[in-house]
Amino acid sequence: MKSYGYEVVDAIVAHFVTQNDKLPVVSGSRSEMEKLFLEEAPENPTNAKEVLNFVLNEVMTKSNIVSHPKSYSFVPGPSNYISAMADSLTAGFNIFSGGWQASPAAAEMEIVTMNWLLKMFGFPQKKGGGIFTSGGSMANLTGIVTARTVKCGDDFSKAVIYLSDQAHSSNIKAIRILGFKKEQIRIIPTDSEFKFSLNKLKNAIAKDRLEGWQPFLLIATAGTTNTGTVDPLSDISKICKKEDIWFHIDGAYGGFAILSDDGKPLLKGIEKADSLTIDPHKWFYQPYEIGCLLVKRHKWLKGTFTERPEYLRDIEGNTSEINFYDHGIELTRRFRALKFYMSVKTFGLSEFRKAISYNIKLAEATESYLRKSPNWEVVSPATLAVVNFRYNPIGNKLSEKKLDELNQYISQEVVSSKEALLVTTILNKQVVLRMCLINPRTTMDDIMETMNLCEKFASKKLPI
Image (tube, rainbow, N blue to C red):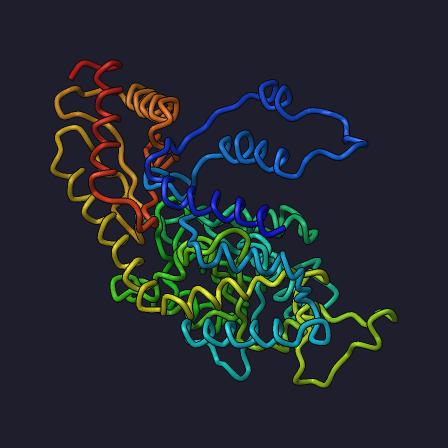
């Protein structure tokens, strides 16, 4: 067992040490993957180290390196070694983190780390609460069902939800899962800065009330995936308070920027939320999976999710002993709090603050470079380490259609080269390249190498 374990640890360490030198992008068709892996379940055993070597050589090499310094797309996952080892401990000891009796230490550690987070975001520590989830999607689902229970009870047939056209798709998915109809969803257009349009929001709420609907939930975003934009949280909170609407903030991407002096001012009003989604496996450098939902009143979670089946009757403790299966969707839960706890204890919050501030400044430096170049146009400025731009060289006067085709081509060629993961999104009906720079391993040299690569491919398509 030790020999086998040492080989696993050696492989993980080798990955951490060498990942910057590898290509971040891989490819593989379904037929190629089936040729490698497709087989019947074996009846007879195979040597354990033979299986391990096969996995290391064929499985681990065939996934994009989301922690690579040139992995710019979607939301990178920088991770950290301490938390990776914590996950190994969690799995190795097979800790059940659902109920107090099964593991009082795991439950207490979740309480403690949850209090750290409540304080971080200005939520009340005594009355507030929260729960670790698999990710932001499950946290949003948990928050929306809690809001529905508190505001609507059993009848939500007239309930209406408001969110912007830049809200994360996981919110729409959660709304559908919970049985809301299309006519109960209001997608409010954003303004020229991709923020919630307050006037259009107010008009929609007023119209719904006149038509007999029940406005009950508004979902704002603290760091949109597309642009890093933060909705006007303080202004929205006032609207929600006046209209008696539950205020949920999806801060899965940008929430942890609150640790940085550069990011905190942008998140003003985040403490006004009734519920808040944050995602430590994004900008808090944790390995997958760990999301989190915070709420102003812990009793809201317990009132929404508590069930009392007969087979759990013997493990109900006193009221101070929290069973986290009563605070969320999952009964069986892995011990997610451990990696968060161990990494914060090991590095200290100061290191996380430095890393977040570094990446905000790196995105701003990238924007500055793009603005000084005759070849690039900034479409959405650097906001919480996200910047959007497109290749549009001065003097060429290309049509919008040609510009879209050119920038799509640049992305395709960069990804095909496997040297960087840089894909497109759509802003203002334009195809643009998007960089998400939350990885502290990324340097300006990495970005310059990538921009030079983009310009090389652009010159093949369009002589400069």
